Structures are given as structure tokens and as C-alpha cells.
Length: 73
Image (tube, rainbow, N blue to C red; front, side, top):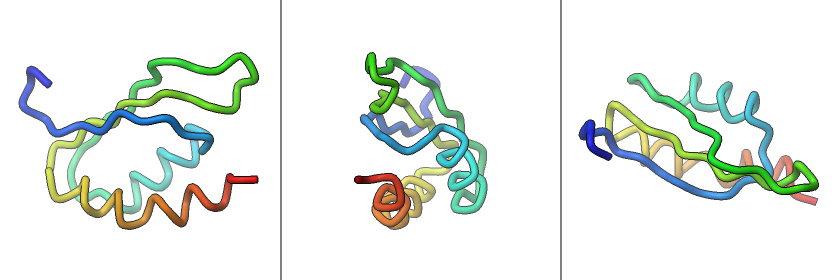
């Protein structure tokens, strides 16, 4: 990213409000979430999460698998 922040771009079925709650709990610094696309069935979304602290990416990745499992069928 041009502002020097670390970012992840990925597809997810996790609702945005659940992602935001998870980020609030797991991240120590500021973050931002951007919705880039959504499937016709509204299930899959493409999101970009930017992190002010690169260590927050590791924290996010460590906990995301269990969050994702809650919304997988």
C-alpha cells in the first residue's frame, strides 16, 4: 500500500461485523477494513484489511482459522 501499512486481501464468508469485532479484540494498533467485492449470493466477500502494526497481521492469521470455522458450512 502506498501509505506504508501492511495489508491482507482475501475472500471470506465471515460477516463483516464479526470480522470487525474480531479485529477489535485481536489487534493492538489501528486497522481498517474495506469491502472490495461481494458475490451474487451475498456469501463470499472480498475484503482488504490494513494494519498499522505488522505484528497484528500475525495475530489475525493465528485466530482467523477458528473464526472462519464458525461460519463454514
